Length: 447
Ligand SMILES: Cc1ncc(COP(=O)(O)O)c(C=O)c1O
Image 1 (cartoon, rainbow, N blue to C red):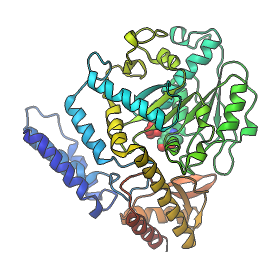
Image 2 (cartoon, protein in one colour; image 1 turned 90 degrees about the vertical axis):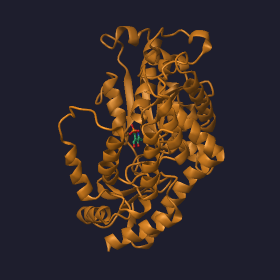
Image 3 (cartoon, rainbow, N blue to C red; image 1 turned 120 degrees about the horizontal axis):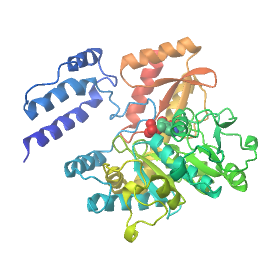
Image 4 (cartoon, rainbow, N blue to C red; image 1 turned 90 degrees about the horizontal axis):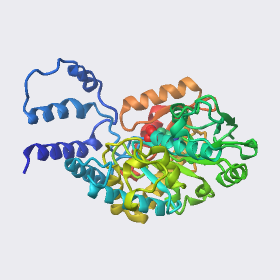
């Protein structure tokens, strides 16, 4: 046995086992100690065991305990043990998963993971998929495919000839689109600001009746799961109107896409699978380790044309899927292995139970906070709860007190002019007891 790898496993197990008994935020002393890293490049070799020991002693106490059950900040899913273990094993394999010729095992696991995901999320079974780092990159891949397709229809080859002189592409976004969508648009040369913005309602849903008529190459970006409220855009109306005008519809579903895998929540997604592309995160609701995002594109050739490093427009040689023909990277780790492990261990029922349990916890938070006299700002349709404890400063003070208390961790946000605390329940590790303990802490800090 390799003592170094055993030591790493032991340290990781000890770390995870200790999460329940430590404050969720890292201690100030532990964070201050990170300054010790500001040291010169070592001149000489050091024993690997000592390097690992230093990493653990300096790093572990300075982490946020988001692998535990009481971290409710941002939208962060704790990694399932099976996906952590699979990730370790695949790291030991150290495959460059660009091409099945060099990495047959990881390519095969990714292929199966992709097939399962399309089935689970009820997306077109022949859609192309990309295993990338997160939804930011998922959006980028899908929008690159969209850019290719809408310009190809206008007789323009954007990969070959770029955007200079190309027919203009109209991009439509909702008023509450996630900021990372604009980053993807900027990187793709479509412009962060060169968009038509459709107003949203009080929950952040695009108002379908305000979608303008579109002509020429057009892309409409819709959203499954608003990062604040969890709200879903009205996909059926938006897809129908956009498709009537020949536009491409892209769904940013960083966490909301997973509602499709949960029967109780599926109605939120009505019409979503009529879109042309979708992006989501496996590190959010599938609870695999960072970083793991996904893009799915109905027109497989459009994604391949946008991303291929070999010959765009040509089928993969021998019909074999070449992972790097669908992703921005050539050399890459096989993120699909972690996805395969999570899906294998959970099964269809397990994914549904995970998503539904998180949403049930969110409802418990909302009920408990309303019962304690606080104002819940959103309709809790998914896993997100927005709560106010009074005016903006009072809410800020409560959140600061709660974060310092360490029982749980929630962040601040601003929702349509109101400062609010945001609770996002996204982890398999959160239990009923975690919710009750956290609720008690929130109420204690707010009173
Ligand atoms: C709706 C939405 N889109 C995109 C993103 C970006 O995802 P990632 O951080 O995985 O790139 C998020 C992150 O929370 C999100 O909620």
